[in-house]
Structure formats: structure tokens, C-alpha cells
Image (tube, rainbow, N blue to C red; front, side, top):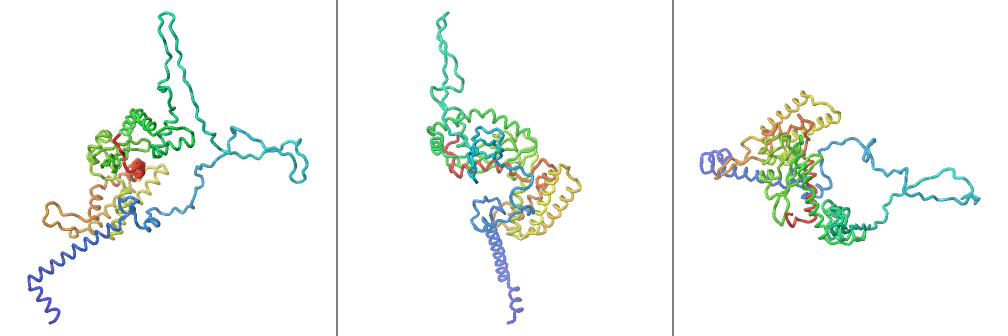
Amino acid sequence: MKREEILALCVSNPEVVAYIESLESQIKELNERLLALEALLNQNSRNSSKPPSTDFSAKEKTNPKSRREKSGKKPGGQEGHSGTTLDMVNNPDEIIEHSLSCCEECGCTLEVIEVEAYERRQIFEIPPIKLIVTEHKSQIKTCPHCGKLNKAAFPKSVKYPVQYGPNILASAVYCKNYQFIPYDRICEFFNDIMGIKFCPATIIKAERECFKNIEEFENVIREKLKASPVIHCDETGMKVEGKRHWLHVVSNDKYTCYLAHQKRGSEAMDAMGILPEFKGVAVHDGWKSYNNYECEHALCNAHLQRELTGIEENYKQEWAKEMNELLTDAKKYTDECKEQIQELDLEQIRDFEKRFDIIIMKGIDENPVSQNPQRKGKRGMNPKTKAGNLLNRFIEHKQKILRFLTDLKVPFENNQAERDIRMMKLQQNISGTFRTTQ
């Protein structure tokens, strides 16, 4: 029997047709699952929101691709940059003069010869650390008129018969809360270097006192951030008492406010007390809870560029590559405007916006509705592909994505908040958890 006859018989048989359609549907579904799994396997810190610590491939760690273009400059310090070279001082604390008694060549005495010049060399050193003990003596006098015994008042900082001074305690608090050195090792360090012996309880007590002292300053930070034209917002998971909490941060280039909370959304943001009253531009990564506040919003384009890279590499979609290039070109243009202190060109902005719209249309063509996976036997909207979801975000949030292009005060990315969070992540990596809420 010929091939055409076999096909004709298959088409005429409803059961065979239904079976073929079922196979085609399964093949399509399996291909979609395979593509999704390959994309998941190819994710790394460069093309997704995954942190660099999760990059398991040696190639990813040793040969990472970068979106940065080569500057053409030689490695190292550039001409005109302010360096940190150790320079000689004009008035040293101590001068040691090395004398000449005889000539190196003939041995003739030089004792009475006048010095013609000096060659100078300077050593910068810290003196041996010695603990200084200051005794405070309060005068006690009896009044000759009424016989009352009077005592002179000690300064407020002198509370106990024997105590450590504020410089020692502040240094210990700095070692623990900024350098993240464990309590026992701080005690060892102070004993080895300075001969000061104290226990972890002394550091903990100093931390509590410092915590109380900065309460008023923390309120000042909140007010400063509320009045700031641009703030950066972010949140990250953290463990407190072994349970999941969220560290929230709101910051600008001068001030940073932290809050640890059991919730990630609006409840925690309201508790921080900044966003509900803020009227400027909030830069964030697009977490939906931020949209509940009436301020202006700008999205972090560094996050979006990583996702675009993932779509380009894993799904081979051209629109993602072109959008990535557009954002890079727009950032380069705004950086030049900031460096040259010039205003934005409205015609140039319109050109970028037209490119944006053209790329969106290309993305719609590359992501037809027919490509979306079908939901079977379940309520709700049909899911979309990862590329389709990202495309929709660019369509819905065009103004937030391009806000850096229309307002030079708004940065391209949310790096400020991410840098502020990094210290807490470092603490988590060292200690694993906060043992108490306090």
C-alpha cells in the first residue's frame, strides 16, 4: 500500500486522527517542559536574580560574561585620579639624625666638617598601646552652718567605681557590628593587642547602650529620607530565632534605615514609617507591595537586564537582545549628561521611546498567544511563558522603566539599597542567624 493511501485511511478514521492530535499535544507539552528545564538549568547570577554564590559551574565563576564595554584604558590607576600614596610630613613627631665620622673612600675624619644636606626617610608607626587609668575624685565637705555632708557630682559617664571608657567600648561595638567579629575573638584581640581583659557580656551591655543612644538619630534618618527626592527600597530574607524574617531597607546616598520584620509586604513597610508619607521617587525591583504607595516609582534596570539576558540566551528571542542594548545606550546617554552637566534632549528621549515601542511590537510577534501553555481542568487565566511575562512587565511599566531617562536624579539601578543590604547578608553568612529579636 502506498504512503498516500495510508494517510488517506488515517484521515478518514476519527480515532486515528484523535490519537495523532493527542500525540502532537503531548509532544508540544514535553517540548515546553524541556525548554523550561533547560532555561532553569542555565540560570546564573548574570542572567537571573540568583546570587553569585549559587553559580556552581567553574566556567561561570572564572569566565563570566559582562555587559560592560571595554573602555580602552590601561589597567590600574588612571591619570589625574586621587591616590592614597604615603607622603612625607613637614613636622615629624621625632627626628633621629645619623652622623658621619669618616670618609667611606679614604677614611679621612669628617667630625668637624659642616653638613651640606640631608637625605630624609620617614617611618609611620603607632606607639605601643598602653592602658591609661583616669581617677575621678569627688570632694566631700561638711557644711559648717547646717552640718550637711556634701559630695561633688561625677560626670554622667562615670557611673561605677571601676569601668571601661567610651573609646574602648565604642571600639568593641565597632568590631562586632561592623566587622562582624565574634564576641570571644574580640575579647582575644583586645587582650593580645592592648592587654585589656573583658568578657562578651561587657560588649553586649555596650551594644544595648549604643542601641538606646541612637534612637533619636534613627528618627532623624527617617525624616531625612521622607524629604529626599529619591530613595532606594529593597528587602531580603533573614533568620531571627531560626524563623524566616525580612530585612527591609530604605536609603539614599547619605542615610540608611533598616527594619527587621516578620512580613515582607505593606505591613512591614508601614511599620518602617517612610513610604506612607514619601512623595518623591522610590527605586525598587518591582515587588508588588511598593505599588500600594502614592509616590512616583522607578524600576531597577539592572534586574531587568539580567532577565533580558536570560531570555536571550535560553529562548533565543531577538527582542530581549535589542531591549538590553536600548537600556545600555540610554544609560550611556544619561551618564554623559550627568558628567557634562547638561540638560536632557527631548528629541533624543523621544527617539529612545520610539525604539522602545518598536522593540515591544517585535516582542509581541515573537510571543504569540498560541505559545502560552494551556491550563487544563483548572480555573483562572492561562499561564504565560517566562518571556511573555517579562514582555508584559515592559509593556505595563514603561514609564517606571524609563524614568531614569526623563529625570537625571533617578539612577539607572537600585544598587544603593543592594549595597546597604550586603552587610546584613555578610553577617548572616558568618553567624547564620540572629538569636533574638533584640
